[in-house]
Image 1 (tube, rainbow, N blue to C red):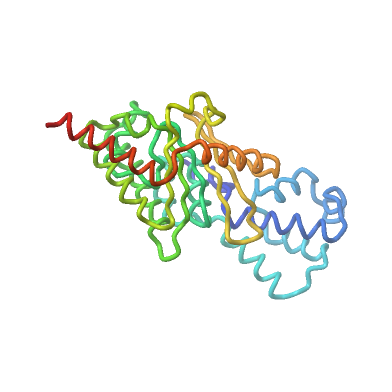
Image 2: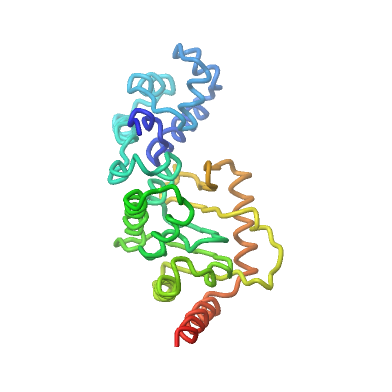
Length: 293
């Protein structure tokens, strides 16, 4: 994949810069049209800058800071540092050829998030997958991929799991549909290992897992999976990520965040409590063991 095509890939730092520039303009009492006119910029271009769609040039940021009356040297340096680092994807650059732009962006956001609330109706959440399960899922949903491509695609999700094992780990609250613990992805041995891993991971204080039982029937989460992220920096608003086979998108308006927050709370209330969910997982393991005897 052409690396140039990724030059505007959203990152946490680019989004933070956009958020702060937008706030500074508002504090200065200027409309977007006012600011664009005074800096000889197209209004649409300023909109793309303020929404993190494009990475502005240094001279553009400096012109905006001058217009907004930002004279504090430290503040200006911090914003320019954000601009400088806004393109950095770290280890993800090694996987540019196999990961979509949106998924790469999601991983970069997740790596800096404080917590993730994740609903998955079909798969074990990526942060909790074993390598064998991840390989079986990838081969199953992307049958056109070669074995080498599958192996390369699996490396990134495994690397991604460092976010829940670092010194200050990401807080994960995951809700999965009951079908996830019964569908034998990769066969009995792979699935048994995956379920045991799930049960073990729930012993971590920063990981909560719930199972949404079949008996709930039709529910609001049947529209599909989503992840709701929040961040430690107040300049990084919450973010929702949703995807399907052909595309993915980020949602960040207050109304969208509120809608998905309410949805997650509904699913959390409808799901079996964490202790009961672990018991369900262990019963599923026991059934596999019995069939194997």
